[in-house]
Image (cartoon, rainbow, N blue to C red; front, side, top):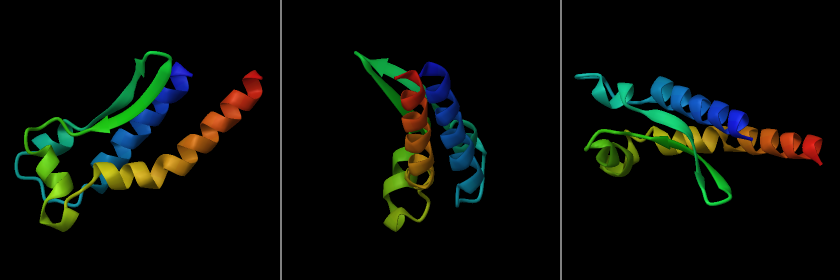
Length: 92
């Protein structure tokens, strides 16, 4: 589960970096996008995050024209969930 979750998080990271709709000025926003996983109790959480102070504004302001994290999640979510289903079916 951890290996799959880490791979899925890295795919989200790569997609968000590749699809970022803004023009780089410093490159910091794109370079600091990070994907991975963490455990919250017995729940494995896959994430993608922007790590600049202004990342939230890129995602939520200007009618979301500069959002990249949410679109990456929506694009890859079906693929990630299908993969988890397949993984869990094999373990049963």
